[in-house]
Length: 578
View 1: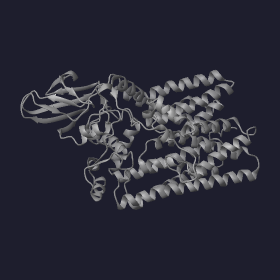
View 2: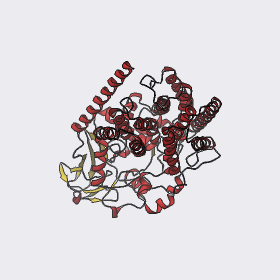
View 3: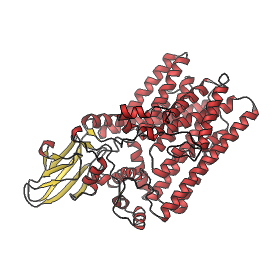
View 4: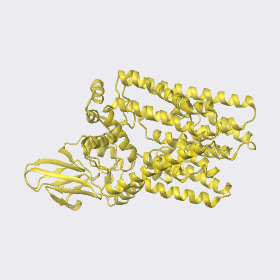
């Protein structure tokens, strides 16, 4: 199979308009009902974006320390979790200044990006415009893409970029001057790393699989190896802010991880009913089984690319399901519980690979009647998926419009139980108001003094320290410094300050630097400070990284700019030549 040439990878205005139309249809229920949907991860991510929004609004930028979101606790989140996109989301929120508009626009963006990248992948492997459009609809209507609208699940955005990762893998198999380019490979991988770390881990695993097969099958092994090494080195530069922040924060602190999930109970399985978190659903199960069966029946006729994508997709499907011994992993490798959390997350990459395999099967099966049957089958599955996703969003929009906008109340703490007040708060021009009356004590990346002092119930500990605490104090932001003040009744009185301290956190009391040895830290490194004067006391909290600074970040952003300009001009030049 030959990849399409430079002109063919431009998917065309008709395809783009088609994807635009389907994306608009899928967000229409929210627009018509004017409903904000607060799913499982909404409060967590809204706090992240509110923090970067306020940085843009006030000009008080702080890359590591959270000074505006998450109860102004000084915790570190965005530096470890999709930092580039967090600032992009904050910038969008600054422009629209509305949670509803923000949610609708980002949902539209995720649907459109998913459809566009899948269309590019399908067209690039030689699919007709019709089949490429069907494939786009199939992906846009899939469960994990729709999870952004329903839950603000960040993996949906990582998933939207995954077709580009698969395309890079296919280009490795071809490995010629036209197909595998160092800059393109580095940019794709770097973008996923800047968006979502777990998606990046899965993407790199898939690329490594393609790389191994490519090394075995390709005659020009040395050229392929050095291209990938160059791309990896460039990607390290373009993601310097991510990996260095992870090294610095994780090596210098003991941290609370994401909630450990039971892996065996978080896997997905083939099913005959509607798709949900634990079930593929009848339509998708049938699609996967058809492609796997086609590979077995037509093994000698299918290309290497079809074989590799289908086998890799099948392996990931097994990893996503209980066919893999997740119970054994649960019992013997508990660290995976917090990093992966849900094996079902492998499903989305399996989906892309097996759908691509079906695209290739349509191209490679020679009889016209078989091709038409497969195309019609894929169209039916695509329509069922998009109808199901539309129905889920419509039902949820109506429910959140007429009742509480909080669709998932797990671990949510309400400062008001009045649905009208909650809706009014999230539609207010004061974007902080909604986050003040609907809070979630998510402890991810919070520090602890040491592993022995780890709280048994981390959500309850966070709630005690930052949400339900009586130890409130006045908090203001000056530059990248969080300023906390309170009145002491006498010299030597103790005050528990609702902030948290990391290894590189710098704390001053009334202008004097104080060390962690001079204070008592609780199970989330929240300090209790002894006042050194009667009346107003002022504590200032700042985080100073050893490496990540304005200068190093500016250098990285400059590298991004140069890389994008170089890629754009190179792409234009190739189009002119072709």
